[in-house]
Amino acid sequence: MLSAGLMAYIISSESHFEELARAIHSVIAVRVYLCREISISVADDIRNHNSKEFATSLRLGERKEQVLRLIAGGLSSKEIAQELHISPSTVGVHRRNIMQKIRLHKVADLTGYAIRNQIVSI
Image 1 (cartoon, rainbow, N blue to C red):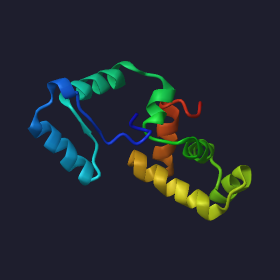
Image 2: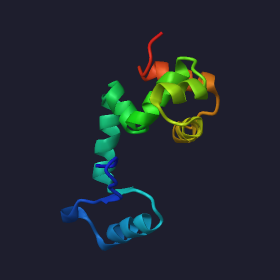
Image 3: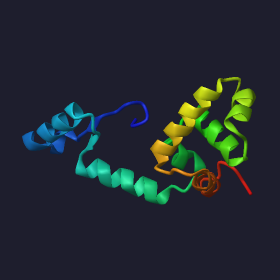
Image 4: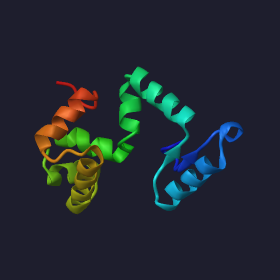
């Protein structure tokens, strides 16, 4: 639901006016709000779920994952552009967005991330 754009989730039978107000303020500030029960459930799911699909779906879309796979494979932006039939500037935008989303700033770090999350193999 989060990847589909969910901004707030509260359990109505257990929510109070204060919690509803916090959720509304969060949405207005373009932040996600999850009630305590849902937050615990999401944290448990993340902690207990080790699959590649879950880890990358929280962070990267399909095209960004393709670009990351090619970056980790050592291809230049021009080579990636040719491979994916997009412009090199579009590759640059994807590269910047990937780095911003996963908070890494070096190609070596991106490669390590891709290996750890089984996007590429050694």
